[in-house]
Image: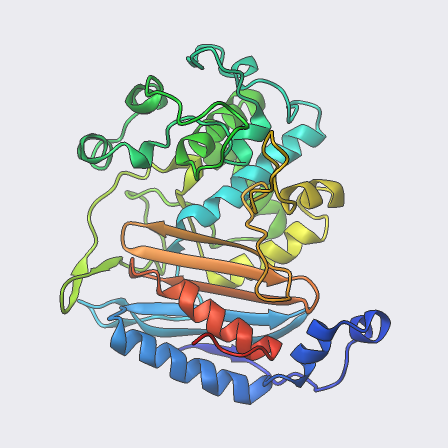
Length: 374
């Protein structure tokens, strides 16, 4: 059983296509849409569940203000035969980072943080080992600080099961040698976003989850989004699974103190569709702040990283694409926006398989009229 929200979209050229005459926009208008695309997605989702194996997923697709579908497939809880729905709550992993980056930009707009300020202005006791690490370095994964998720098994044996304080978390990675001097390289970095969460708390005087509740979730009406505390009762929350050799297994335990501002939020597909629209429309940060988030960072040598502030900005073929993926014990996620066509795709899965990225690519190519990958 699945809960479905869908409607057909009228097949006419949008004003955006008429004004700009973009090839990508014209292609999207000629692509399958409405019931034809929903049927393709249904078949793709069922094949993903079967061949993964994948416990369940929820898929949301819209173009501009036109919602094509939000639909759940498979099971939110296999043991109790609870079906996945449009409103199922998932751990969203690193999609959390864009909420963190937006919170930082709100504080920048308020004059409380400077993007090029050294992080030690806010965390004076952090040992930067002779380097000057800016807030911008943390946002763009160019700080060179060792990412705690790359330290290895010794880290996970301690951090995964224990509710560590900030001080205890920092002790696990702060003395590790830098991977490179700040600004000289790019390496995806969970430590940087964990530190940004601490800076948000220091500057705002609120807890990270309290800040998001007051300044993001509440004002936007994202009632199914929250910090994903394990002990808290969260209505409709999915169980997580991992792929075994031939079958699914329950996911391993992890304290949600560990991902923190790098990956500890829960949300739903409808909330994330609302979020991405609000983020672009000036309801969360200014247009200038969003453009900073969605613009590729540059290394000191001038080369582009393909990553802004918690938003990847690498294209899909000829189509501009602003996207991010996420993964955390038992869950994998992706959300993508295609600016020229206004296409948004959000896919959340309660299996740590990486399948959402492949599914998103296929749906985008169908909706944009692109050839499929071989």
